[in-house]
Image (tube, rainbow over all chains, first blue to last red; front, side):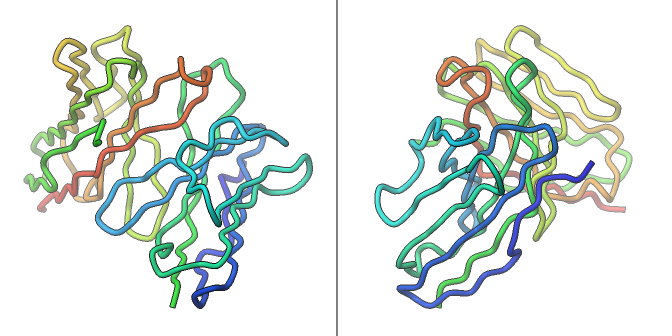
Length: 115
Length: 116
């Protein structure tokens, strides 16, 4: 049973370009979460999605950032017009449908570097 | 506003001894707590969790204790092994907010070093 998959693992962009980060949840998991980790910091929640629905986007910056989890395919975190402050590790997590605990299982992360 | 606090940034223990990692929280709505372990350049790995209706949960060498009145939890690792050296994150969730699945609020992490 494959774990959470993220790609690319490393992404380099110049200021003003777009970054697209992909996440495939674990098999059987229908909930996806995106977190960002800045250097020397803990993980900060960004957005929580189910298939075709955004459940909680309270941690998402209001501008330039968007997320989707289409009916088919991976979840995508999109950052438009990247700035140096967007450089961070972005982690995706997934969890099974409600009924169990709230354990979330994380992917290996995408390390975004903005030049 | 740091709702989950791990005030000690690092901890060093001798192999075979007990490691005690502490975590405090301020939000009384949190009712589910988790510990994650993270190696460099990898994603966090789930270790152990505890619901607020319990005060202890044990899984092998790992035990988590929860003191709701003090808003404090701790992770005990015994005996500690060199392979336990990693960053440990405490996390909390408030399932009432968006249902049984909800966002996790993380502390900043504690770097554990286990000396051979």
